Length: 261
Image: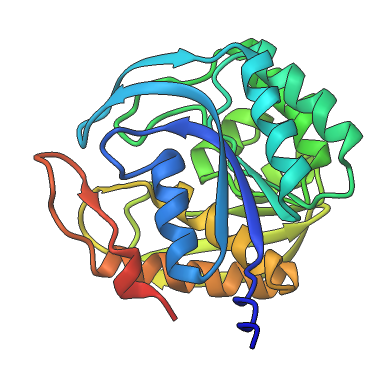
């Protein structure tokens, strides 16, 4: 008698840097995917030296090595959604642009990281310009926080950034202000499509942006619409922050397992 085949799971491909503290980057993507029931394949763009206080050093891989990872994974796995986090260098960004233009059938989530949670710069002006002009137009949705959105567009407000945004859906997360309520905003082609207020929780947290963008990728992999994936992912991330714990002596770490639906 043959045994039944095990169930399958949607596959998300995360292209990002590694965080040895396991709070952000590929490690956060793996933890988020496990909590939400998707299989996360990872293609490494950069090694980092970091802890709960911040990033000390970034060593970007050769773009050809990352491309080899992508080609190998996509030859084997039926990837449902691609998520891009830390890119690390302009040659890496150009390789990703060329690769994604060939695989334009894959929904793309971009978390346009240019500054670490501890404040360290992770992208120079040339990389930010290329990201804005060449990569963001390919994305189904991008998930910058408000400072990132303003920096990338030169705008002064979230609405202004949305009007200047080069892609389709845009979620501007509000995690860096001082108001009692977070004002997360979803736009499509510059038009406000939804607002998602949440209570601001005290403290500083490691990996919230990585968690949010990967959760959205997981929702899309399960067939959710963009607004539904955004709503469920914001709720999941907020719950993970509410259950955060201390592991090092700096930022708190999200408890994604406690936040799973």
